[in-house]
Every structure is written in C-alpha cells, then in structure tokens.
Image 1 (cartoon, one colour):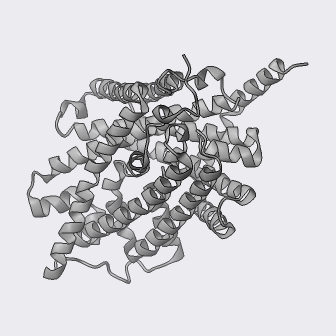
Image 2 (cartoon, helix red, strand yellow):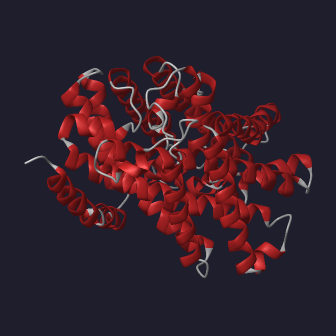
Image 3 (cartoon, one colour):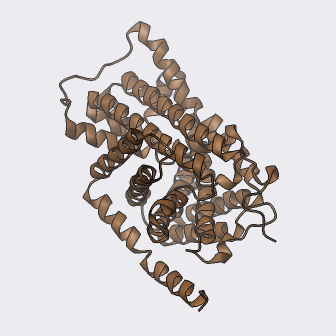
Length: 434
C-alpha cells in the first residue's frame, strides 16, 4: 500500500524541534571531536576562517530556506535544481549527492564502531567482527527509519541533546579557567595570517557544516514545511556555528595550539585534565552517540533522496512507493544494501583511508550541489539576490579550497550516473505515447 506523498498531520511527524535536531545532529557528527587538532596549526587564521564559513553557511541556509518556502517538497536540492535547470541537470546533482550519502553513511558507521572498541577491544583487532557489527548497526538504524519517521525523529532528538554536552562542557571549563590565567593564546606570528592559510582552514571548518540542507530533503515528512524547514535550517545552522566556534576555540586555548595539533583526542585531553583520566572513556561514549545520531539522520536522507528522484521520473518508480506509514521502504532497503556493499568491499582498508576517500566524495558532492542550489535561487528568486550571490561565491571559494583531487573525484562521481541517466531516458521515450 502506498501513502500520500503530501499527507496530512499523521504523515508529517517532524515538527520544528525534530527538524532542527535533524539539521544540528547531521552537522555535528564524530568529526568535530578531531576538528581542534586539525585547526590548531593554523593559529589565528582560524578566526577569520570560522567567520567566513559561518557567514557562508548562513547565506546557504538562507538560500535553502527561501527556496523551501516556495517549494516545500520532498527532495530539497533535487526539487530546486530541477525547477531552475531541468530534469537532466537535477538528476546528476541528486545522483552525486545520493552516492555521497550512502558512502558517507558507511564511514559514519565505521566511526561509531571504532568508538565502541574503547569498550569492546576485540572490535579493534578482529576485522570480521568489526565489519559484522558495523553492518548490523546500519540495518538497525535503517529498521528504525522504516518503522516510522517519528521514531527516527525521536532518536535524532535524544542523540543531538546528548552529543552537545561535551562540547558545552569544554566551553564551561574554558570560562572557569580564564580568570586564573590557564588559557594559552596562539602566537600571532606563527603562522602569519594569510589568504592561503585562511582558505585551507576554511575548507576544514566547512566539513563540519555539511548537512545544513538536511531538513529540506524529507520535506514531505515535516509539519508546515514552508515555515518549519526555513526556521530549522537557518536556526540549526546558526546554533551549530556558535557551538563549533566556542567549543573548538576553547579546546585550543585550554591545550595550547602545539599540544592540540598533536592530540589524538583533544576533547578527551581537555576533559581528562580537569575531570580525571577516565574522561577518555566518557568522551568516547559521547562520540559514539554523536556518530550514531548522525548515522540515523543521514540514513533518513539516503532513503528520501532516491524516492524523490523516483517521483520525478529519473529513478525507477518502484523506489518512490510509500508504505502505509509514509516511508519509502524500498528506497531505504536499496540504499542500505549499497552501504553494506561499501562496508564489505572496504573491510580490509584502514579507517583513516576510508574516511579520507569519503571526505573527498561527500565534500565535493555537497559543494557542487550548493553551487547549483545558489544558482537556482538566483534564477527562481525566493531570497534576496545578494544573499544568493554570496552563497554562490562562498561555495565556489570552498570548492577551490577543497583542492584538485576532491574536484576530480567529484567529476568522476557525477559521470558515474551517465549509464543510469541513459537507461532512464531511453525508458521514458519507450513509454511515451506515440
């Protein structure tokens, strides 16, 4: 039995709080726990980098908010690009984005089990056991999403509330340490502030903002989407930006830049310094919950995106069929099968190599999508032109900062959709009336 894609209140279980949790929870994943170590070598360049990234992300959030007010439909980016540039362009953008979703979910699942190994050491040495648990975790979260979007929303809300606790904790520690002179300021001359360093640091901070569009993808599941999604998108992005800025800066100031740069677990080191050696396990537990919440939210998106493409006629229609509870079960099963394949094929690779590859895919696919969504806003309206132009310039700047390797992988990812596009176009011509 299929459900009504527009649905009533029962088919739209995500309110403002859950939609905001989806945005915040998808942006704050496991990566934030290593972000201070990545940013520490850039010294004071991090401050303007954060400023540019937050401003650019808010411009993009405003673009998504404006487009969603006019087109509150499931599929988000796919819907906006299709309206502006046609079905063919929209297909390639959505195709690359969807692949980055299910490949990225494989990495998030690996990260979750990696943190779990702090409590079950066998997971760190037994590749077969680790891969099996990782796949089981993917299907557990898939089952939660299939059971109903509201169930997935509750998991996201609880995980998001829990995951920000250690981030808030380090800010409180820094505020308490400041009056006693326990903070260490970066050397203003090492490294010098420069455009190249700001651009590189800005690319690193951008990775932490991927997912701001999360609430737009399952628009058909959001109550009063024309109002709720813009508020959740802009508000969630602003809240996440503030949390990142204060938490990451606090860690660097508490550890000192040189120490933070060589720390394998900067948040654990800070909390351990003030709360005892057992903090490493505490932070590992929070990081695991953080990754678990992100996995839940991204699995929601990896099911909704192909369903929206099927509804638009560029994917097999069977993937667009909804169950009685309004969930695209077949799309979820297909996506999670692909995640399982990614995990099985990469079982012998190290976590670091897997994450590096996925970071390139996810970042580039999202940036290309952001460029086209900003261009769609320029063509369709819905937001002030200077905001759309700012979002487009920022996305292009970030795409440049991502480097040539990321851009090459992005092109490969988009071109990989050519056979699917050709098959669907040929099928559409065959089914068209004479």
